[in-house]
Image (tube, rainbow, N blue to C red; front, side, top):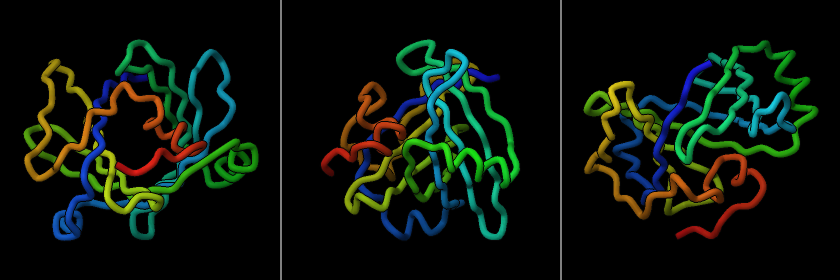
Length: 160
């Protein structure tokens, strides 16, 4: 188990030029009814080239921006069993950029053409990450429930 503390920003869609230079993967993320006192439970298939990694993740909120995260790698067969029991899901393309000691994850969803979501995790030293100048922030959505991935899998807010 690990504590995940992240900030989330709605950003203008980055240029193809910027995105093409970043590490990218395709993600299918499916949600399950939470069990064992967790508020969120999901399975994910993350494809990078010819490699697919399947994970099962359960989260329990501990503050407005932090959650205890219990994640394990699972087999494709386990993933497919969970997939059959999922209640909702979404797909996205994730790009990862490192800057100033932080990893920035840019999630591009197929249902938006002008905006994307930028996530960055707090580091262990308590340093607050700054958004790199190459991104244009529309607004901070860290505390906006409609922009959580589970909520996006159920209802897509209008694009800003």
